[in-house]
Length: 307
Image (cartoon, rainbow, N blue to C red; front, top):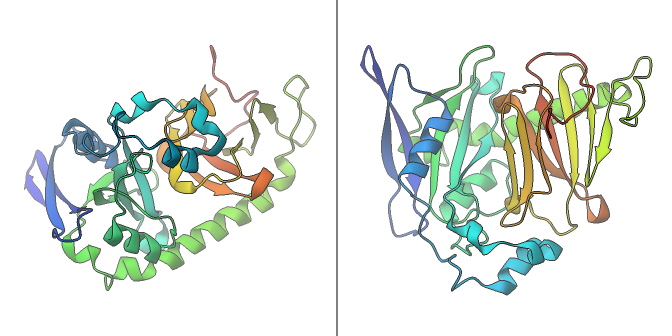
């Protein structure tokens, strides 16, 4: 709602992990000059330390639980990472024409699984309705963000009634996500011939765009996108994956371990329009990241200067 010419109030919802506690509405006041995107709520939750408590301190950390979650990467796990306040935005639905370009996002503790936080049954049920089978842990916050093409990202109201299983967006969420994935796969298939991989040391081949490989990853590109595949252990679960996309940075990690890939980027991308999924089975298990270029055109390499 509008508070005046200079301020806007946006509603979001908290889903407590404890089923005995009711869902709560909360508000965020934004000035005209403030960042009004979902990052503003992320910053507020981080500042308030909403995920700073939990059962994941060093003295109570369950080594077997960490090993179950991280597999072979457990040996590189740094327990001090659990002391860091980190809020993850998880997309329940992606912005698209059908939902008015308004996506719905969970805000959660990005190492909640490693902290062995209790399962949030109500949030997990919402995630299941959206097509996300992995459970969610700890307290969860829900907000809606509108991302109109060519305009700034803006938080809009998400109220208690929106958390109901009978709400329109939730009833249509699975179909919208399925359509989004079909469209993305169709685009990847159509551009397959242009995403020819060549060695970084070679020149550009006629009709193809440069790609390449690095330690544990490979990348290809089209005129408008860069696709990065990062190899992960066969048992890796989506809930344990941490992907951070900045305007000029990319990081892919398994919760609590050192990043598998951490690099600056050659040119700016659009984090809000970039996506990631986990694909493949066994030895082919990988995290697939699609980066949306801000400026169309070929990249000669993926790493930025000084990487």
